[in-house]
Image 1 (cartoon, helix red, strand yellow):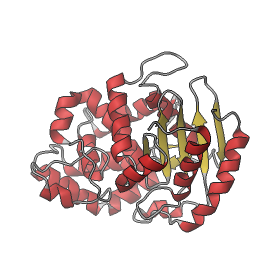
Image 2 (cartoon, protein in one colour):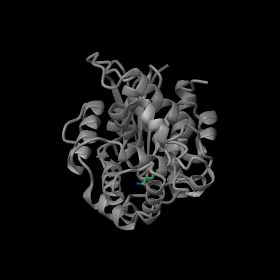
Image 3 (tube, rainbow, N blue to C red):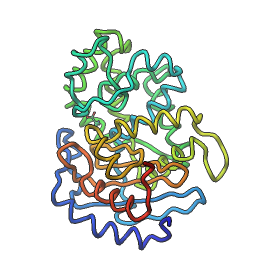
Length: 309
Ligand SMILES: NC(=O)CC[C@H](N)C(=O)O
């Protein structure tokens, strides 16, 4: 049985909320440290147009790593599969999302997948446009098409805070430039990437992204193809194998749906042909996933029998 009311989700949020106390907000991006540790929200969007939600759903938060999925979709549309996968691999790493180690030990020196920071920086550098503003504008426009929301923007404070402190990501980008995986100017890539990560929305927006991916790129309300099915399929596959960082295997066993997390505490999940799920809960576990969000996903998976495995 699918969820049929906000009240059902409210119950689950109340149960999972206790776990926020066991987590920590991300503070390596100083502006993210201001997030409310105890906050938790969830939304479920269904193909019939129903959307149920609970918790602090009006609060917006930044996408962070969830943006990597949309950037990948746009890079695939702009350049085609062959070009993208010549420069970025398809394998999980088992390492933290910002690790540099496999860049050196893997030959050729290309990032193992587009969901780790190294791979995402390479993918962002492939987004086409004549200026940084045009490239960011194209990405935001795609986010608007997918969520069906107008007026999507990015949080300038979070973007600037990350740009000023992102020396680890900067070093990944320079490493990739050395090996010609990135052709762009590194500072341009950094600026585009940090703005991309700072795109803001509510958990309802996240659920709508999940729904479009769940429906193979088609808007179930209008019948419009927003992403080609192949692009949606590649995105969902990476979400299963690498979407929850180095906890993706455990998440597949415990929850069993394609999902992508971000250090703002977001989780965006696509349950094939059933629904999209969006969660924001900024308290993170040691691997960088929303601690209460993960618990909530486990509870929802059991209650609504969501696992695809
Ligand atoms: N895991 C994440 O959400 C990482 C995104 C963040 N902007 C970073 O690059 O560090």
